[in-house]
Image (cartoon, rainbow, N blue to C red; front, side, top):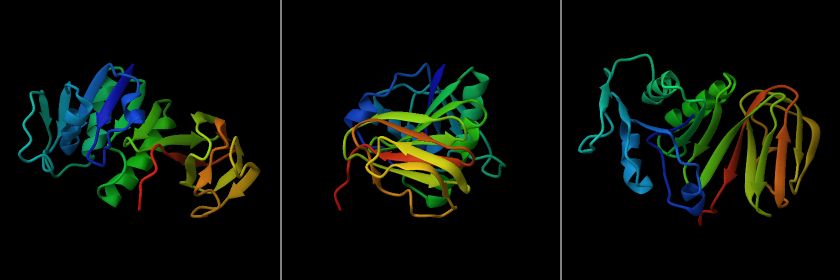
Length: 209
C-alpha cells in the first residue's frame, strides 16, 4: 500500500513529479497540506499542531496534536500511514525549508527504510533514496543526470555502476566529498553497500543559478 506524506519543504511541478505512482492514501503533515493544490489531490488526513498552516483552509479531517510534543509532524503522519497499512512512502516536499527539519527528515527516511518500508523523498526537482547495506538501489537515469551519495555513517564497500565516475568496493568516511555531484552514464545506475547507511539524491531538473 502506497502512501504520500506531504511535508513543508519545497515542491516544484515537474514531469518527474507528475509521473509518480498514484497513492492509496494521502496524509499531510501540518504546512505540507499547501502542496495539495500543486498536486491536485484530496487529503485523507491532516496531522500536526498546525503552527505552520495558518490561514490554510482545506476540506480534510484533522488530527490535532499539542505544540509541545516528542515527535515531529512528519513522524506523526508516518505513524498514521503505517497504522493504516502503508508499506511504501513517498514523502513530498522533502527538500528545502528549514535545514534542521530537512536533515531530520532525511535521517528518519533512512531509519524507516531499515524497518522494511520502501521510502522515496521527492520535491519535484530533486529526489532521494535511502541506501542500506546489502539492499542495492537501481535507478533509470538520463546521461549526465547529477546524483550524490550522502553518507549518514562511514561507508564500507560502496560500489557505483552506470556512473561517469564509478566506484568499486570503496570506503567513504563520514562527511567526504568523494561521492558528491557524480553523473549518470545513461541507463541503469546501481549503488550498493557492504556496510553503512546513505541517502542517494538525484537532481530531476537542473536548477539555474
